[in-house]
Length: 149
Figure (cartoon, rainbow, N blue to C red):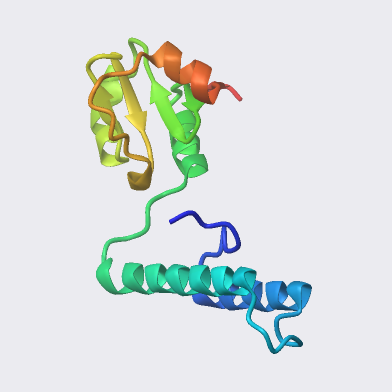
């Protein structure tokens, strides 16, 4: 499902607020006829609300940490890395000594790239063939994270 109208809505209250704003902009309340755009927006609202409800009912584990929080922890260990898209990559000789801490934060090791990576669970790659880190950098860009900054 592609979310166009309710992106970044974190809870049902934000979804309802966004729907009211959209309704005022497109004047859905003043028109007796239902337009295709209105059907699309209402359908998306129902899907997003259902997804939020399913997450709340089915998930008893704590929410994942944000990329910024993970970067802060990495800096506190004195490690450097790079952010490629929504993934954080760590490589170098001193990284291996922190492997237990990295695993506890949700990092995994990529043998083909010889680097540790962290990502949100929804960003899991379905690609079975390993993609070189340089190709990932070219596709998503790369922002260097230094321990001193």
